[in-house]
Image (cartoon, rainbow, N blue to C red; front, side, top):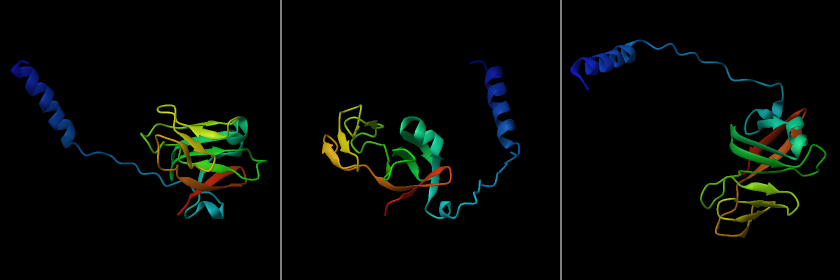
Length: 141
């Protein structure tokens, strides 16, 4: 690199980094639902869940969540879909009623318990309910 190119490159970088930055903060979105305050967080809509019988939200406020069921289900199931073995995202196999890790074939029951390794720890669970048109979850203690 020539001296002139070096000074130009790093000189512009220095000038740009010393300029004040404008930070814009937005207020968090609020809902009128009482249960979404506190520990309960929305992860998607009923329409999204009913479309395929499952709802994956990898960026929810409580972490990655995979909800299984439909709005007509008596019991919705929600787990953190991150395999406890190597961190791959598990898939729900509806016919077999298991979560399967595509990386090393760990199997988890619908409640998140390990059925077949190499994973040794269960998937984390969430309490789940539907309020209005939202699917909301709460991390189990």
